[in-house]
Every structure is written in structure tokens, then in C-alpha cells.
Image (cartoon, rainbow, N blue to C red; front, side, top):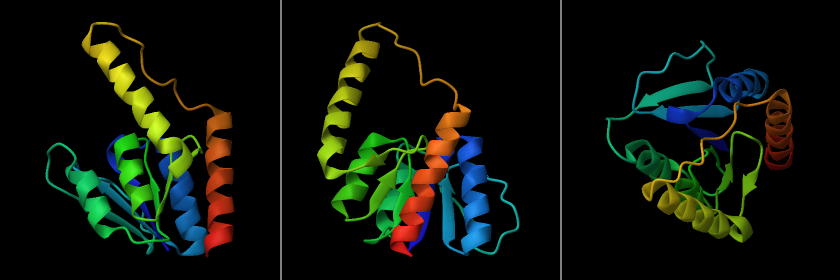
Length: 148
């Protein structure tokens, strides 16, 4: 099992949890971004910098992922592709995407995008709370325990 991280918009607390996991378990955690990332010196942590451009990091992750891998992303279209590849996707707030919920989330995302395009602003997601961090860490630990 490998863990791929859509790192361009991954919150720092989520990255910190993943660094601790990699250090503790030696599971390979690969951060993919179109900008330079500063990573701690942990043998099982790797940073991949892809070229700038729309969905370049997402496409790289999709090309690399195999069944049984985990992808950390808040990008719902990427999560849908990952699910179709029989891999798992977890958002930085600790919610797993599944075949049952990812299509509904895509519909909501598309609706919100249409609203924003028409001038209605809904704001972004709130900053990660301590509870969000705990929920993510617990979901990640459960996944690793079940799948390693």
C-alpha cells in the first residue's frame, strides 16, 4: 500500500499527521504538487513536483495509483477517478469517498460551481479545527490498520 497526497491544497495539519504516520509505520507517502515542497527527512516520504497546469498533479496520481492505495484529496473529481480504479480516497477532514457518496458530492460541487459562476459566493471551507484533525487521524489509522 502507498499513500498519495494531492499536496497543492493539502492543509499543513494533515501533512503533519501523514509525516508522523510515515515515520511510525514506514508506509510510503508520496506528496504530489506543481510547486516545490519542503519535506522532512523521513525515508518513506517522497515529494514529486509536476509541471504547472490544470490537473497535472491529479493526472500524475491517477497514473500511479493501483488498487489498494490510498489518496488524500479534497478534490472530488480526483476522488471519483480514484474510486473507479479500486483505490481509496480520504479527504483531509477524515471523510472517505465511496462509490455510494462520490457521485452525489460531484453533483453538489457542480451545483456550487454554477452558483459561484452566477455571482453567488458561498465562501470556502472553514479552517481545520482540532476535531477535524482528530477525525482525519483516526480515519487514517483505522484504514492503515485494516489494510497493512
